[in-house]
Length: 173
Image 1 (spheres, one colour):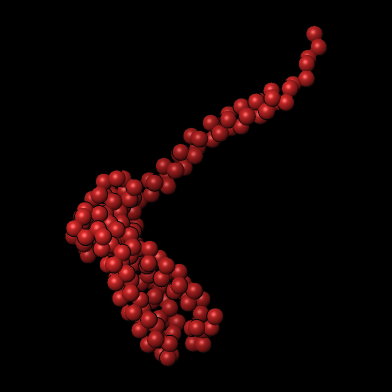
Image 2 (cartoon, helix red, strand yellow; image 1 turned 45 degrees about the vertical axis):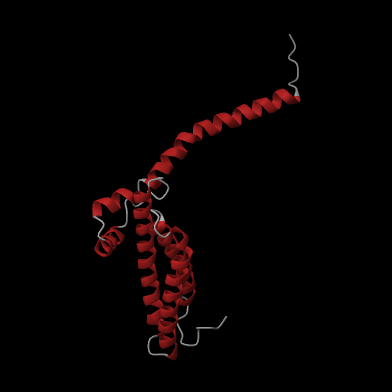
């Protein structure tokens, strides 16, 4: 018996089924990799700093540091506090590096002044942005998320300055 050529529709179906088999084969690997990412331990430097400044226990921080999408307000707030503290520690590290680069120059005092002004701006902005949540259970989480976002942006700005190793660099863009 002679074999009939496969129709276009049959050919497309064969390709679709093969693609689906590949996807189904890869899904367990994908989910295993995702669980490894989510299973990462919290940064102990952040846990210590947060527990010292907030009154949260190390155990509560470790149990909720990655629960920002949990839907449980307390867990989400602890997670937001963890992220904020992590960003703040990163900011301090980068700021110290930039400050070291301009130490003893006219830019040193200007950087300090700019950083203090930025800190006031961040606090006022996040106070304003979270005002609608005042008195609600989500207020702290909203304010912490705002602080983290602004801090992350400031770190990016300061990281540009870390590339400068000469006193003439600030403002040369």
